[in-house]
Length: 362
Image (cartoon, rainbow, N blue to C red; front, side, top):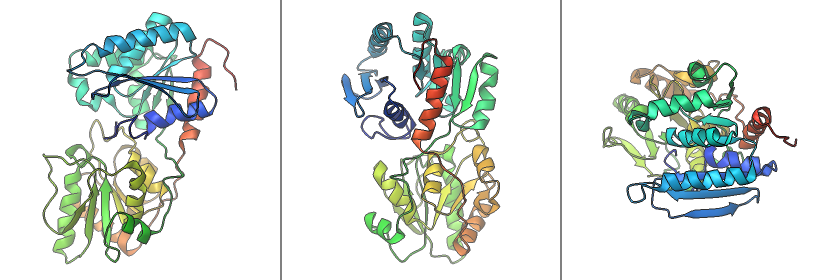
């Protein structure tokens, strides 16, 4: 999930949402398949209303999926939960759909991305499993408005479709002194730094940033490019200019990364992924109050519509270079309110009350 392990890193929507629901005094039991060799894991995480179970499912443990279904069925029949929330990927949506049919517990499907853009969607039967899960759902939560409009045709008319965008932990992602952040990451303190973090891959159109950076250098700029995240063999990091590759940073260091930059870049493509996603990095950059430049695609086009200085057209590296220079010469920081995970958990709690057949406390 976002290059992170939800239990090791305890990061992002899939970890923060159940944790915040537990803080609202909702008893939450999480079940997940581990595609790595973690071993059987069950633990109660603080706060005490949150229990997490993980079971391996990979080539070494092909029967893990049957074990987790059995454990969830036993748990659901014992505890009679108000709702089942399925997320992560199509396989987990399929498990949630199956459990809901077997037990009659209402299903909520949480789409933090367009799962049809994932490689898993190309596997046999996944298309049908995905559509059936959405059709069976009493409610569907979508990370963006474009995605909510896209999945309407897959859902029943009575299904509640709610936009629940990504959020941040404001105790982590907040404005911090640039110099201190650069020292923390061993970055040059007196230079102009632009950069991006996350998947450095073709579906994020990282190549357009590399071309824009090369153009800036050709015009005599001495800008430094800072990168963090998983590299792609298809789009290797260039070997020209002053490029600092920091590898895959810990979650706690990402806030320092953005605060160290003079301009942060959010590169996307007009694709099945880009037009429906809500980039987590955009939330984090905006929460840190840093100048940014983003591709004018999907939700970013609407989010920054009042800030043309922050948008460039998909694939146009010359325009990206121009917008970067504009931000360096006269920085514009969008005044956009970024929700925290507690805000989003409250929305989920309301949805659970709406779909549940049993009394649910305020």
